[in-house]
Length: 172
Image (cartoon, rainbow, N blue to C red; front, side):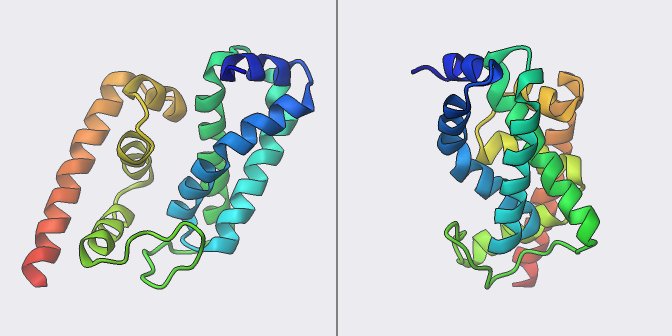
C-alpha cells in the first residue's frame, strides 16, 4: 500500500496503518536521533518520544502526502528537546555504540566532529539534505524557514564544514 494511503488511514484512526508507517521509518528516525544525542540508549529514547508524539497528533495532520516531513519535524524537535533537557554537550564520540555505528575511519570522525561544531539549524539542514536526501522544499517545511534561507543556511554551513575539515587536515 502506498505511503499516502497509509497516512490517510492513520489520520483516520487506523493504528495498524500508523504502525506500518512507523516501522518503515524507524531506522531513519534512529539515525537522525543518534546524530543529535550520540549514544544508543538516548537515541532509542528520542525515537520512542517521537513515535509517542506522532501517535498523539497524527489526527491533526491535514495532508497525508507530507507524513514523512511531519514525522521528521517531530523527530528533530524531540531530539533537540532531549538535548536541551539533559543539558548535554553533544560531541562526536569515537566509541559510540549502537546498531547504527558510523564508520570509525579518520575522515568520518572528522566530519562528525565538524558537523557537531555547526549551529543547530545548519547541522539539521545539512543532515537532512545530504544524509537523508530530502528535497530543499521539504527541509524548508521541517525547519519552518523560507526556501531561500534554507539554501543560504546549507551553503554557509558547507563553507564552515569545509574550513573545519581543512583545519583538522592541516593539524593531522
